Image: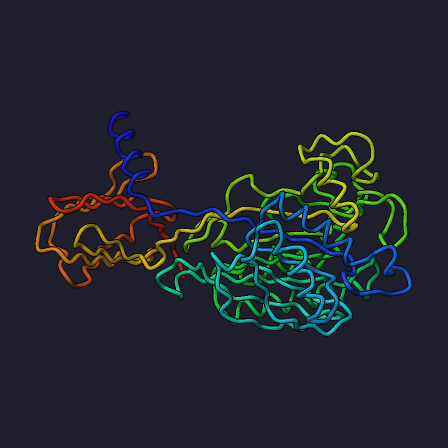
Amino acid sequence: MKIRLLILLIFSFVFANSQTTFKVMQFNLLNYGNYNTYCTSSNNNVDNKNGYMKTIISYLEPDIICVNELENNAYYADYLLDNALNQDGRNYYQRANVNGNGYTVNMIYYDSRKFVLDGEDNIWADPRRINAYKMHFKDAGNLGNAEITFISGHLKASDGTDNETKRANATANVMSYMVNAGTGNYVFLGDFNLYTSNEEAHQNIINPSNSSYKLYDPVNHSGNWHNNYNSRYYHTQSSHSSTNCAVGGGLDDRFDFIMMSEYIKNGTNHYQYVSNSYTTVAQDGNHYNDAINFGTNNSGVPENVINAIYNMSDHLPVTMEMEVDQNTSSVNKISNLEVKYNNPVLNNLDLTINSNKILNLQIFSIRGKLIFNTRKNFNMFKSPIDLSFLKPGMYIMRISGKEINLSKKIIKINKL
C-alpha cells in the first residue's frame, strides 16, 4: 500500500497541472502625492517615498500590489509606477485606471508578464469608492476558467456610530457586488479601519446571508484587535510612535486585511491560498505600542527594509501567496492526444480524449485510496462519468493506456 501511494504521489508530481505561485500585497501609502496641512512636501515628499517603495518592492517582489491613499490624479499613479515599481531592472508593472470619489484613491499594480486586466468596476462607498479589478492569469488558455477579482477598499476611519455605519454600508455593497457577479475567485483587501471582528462591517463579509459568498481571514484571528496585546502579531498600524504626517502611538490596530472567497480557500477553480503564507511584514510581535524601527527587530526582515516601511507609511504591508493552475483550460496535450475535462466537478466528470484506444480512468483520494475505476473509449465526445457520490474535496484523476499516462488534480464540489 505504501509503495502504491508513493508511486501515485510521484505520478501526481510529474504529471500534475503546471503550478505557479504568486504574491499579493496590500499597503496604505500614507497620502502619496496628497499634500495637506499635516502631510507636506517636506515630511511626506514623493521623491523620498519612491526610494522607500523601491526598496520594499525589491525585497518583497509582489505580483499584485493593491494600495490605498494614492492622490486622485493619474500623474501620481504613474509617478509611483515609473519611479518606484519599474526600477531596479523591473519594467513589467502596469496599473489600472484612476477612479475614485475622494482626495485619495485605491490602485492595483500588477506584473503584466503574468496577469491581464480584463475590466474594472466601481462599488459605491462613503467617503471613498471601492474598486473591483477583474483579471486572469496570462498563460491561461481559457479566460472564463482563470478569472480572479481583486476588490480594493479604504473604509471610513475612526470610531463612533456614524463611522461604523459607513463601514457597514461599504462592505454590504461589496457583498452585493459579488452576489450579482456570481460565485468565484474573490480577494477583498485594503485598509478596513476595523477595531473588532464583531463590528457589522466585518460580520457582513464573514457571515453573509448567503453563505456561498462568505469571505475568510487566512489567519482566522477574530476578537478585539484594537489595543489588544493578544493581537500584536497582526497589528498593521501605527508603525510610528510620534505624530507628524504619520499617526503616532505605536502598533496597536489591525486595519489592513486580505480576505479570500471559499473558492480560493479550497482551490475550487484554479486559484488556491498557500497555507501559512499570510504575512504582516516586519511584525515580530515585539513592538506593541512601539514604532516598528524601535530597538531590536526579530521578524527576519532586513533593517533597511524596516526603515523603508517606517518612512514610507504609518501602516505595515500585508502579503499572502496563492497558487494558480496554469492549465486553466483543462486541455492537456500529450504527443498527439488532447484531453479535455471539466474542473471543478459538480456531479459528472465530462471527459473527452481523441484516442480510439481503450483507456483506464481511475480516481484516487489524496491519501492514495482507489475510489473509482473504469475502462472505455473516450474518443471525441463528452463521456459523462457520474461522480456525484464523491464528497467535496480534492482527488487525483489518473488516465492511463498505451498512448497516455496522465495524473491530474480535480476538485469535487457540492454546489455551483
